[in-house]
Image (cartoon, rainbow, N blue to C red; front, side, top):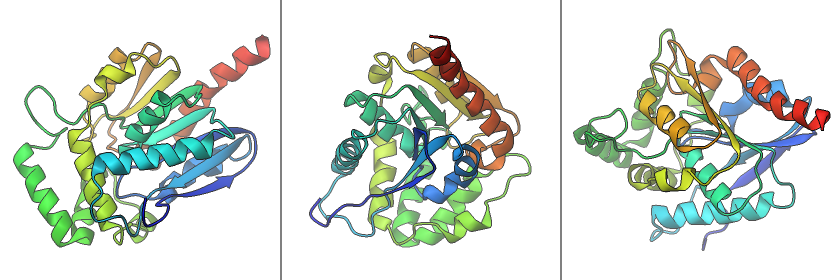
Length: 263
């Protein structure tokens, strides 16, 4: 990109590498509960890709391609054992695997495949409402993001964590607009069938951003994928139900470790 790298990478802990790819409107701080849990046995690679300034002529295809290219190059020296992705981060995960990054396993939270279903709705949101959201993102990004956070944390007894709302990347408006467009337009159904890595989809039962049909579609399309349903949970179970979710992810990872030890 003409304005320099929009990406920042931090590493915490040592061991088999786990890479975290956050949703749009979030930062890598969203993964704090996972880093605290896995840092004793894993090198946690935290990626922030909320650019403060992007080339004014850049499209969301250019953004996604640039981020995927740069991240692929950065990770090749220490290929990740696992990609952990939330929302828009799923698109980056799919792009990295498609580019040949050697990944043992994929963990998706609210994993996206495409954003329109057979009824021509944008995920769980009526298409006419999407236009209003897009306009609000232009006119008042903080207000729109606060509304999005309320939508994300819409499961039973869920509220947006204060530390996340304080860290909202509202100065990265260009990135948010382009990633919002990317979510609307991209479709990865034809790609997923070729992925040979193991996959775990952790899906919130009350997820209004990424409805259950998306998780079921990933399980159907990928050759070695399983679906874990979190009851009374919205779009971010790794935040609101982190204790049980971390244990489930650890069990998923231990399957490979046990097999490696046996061999």
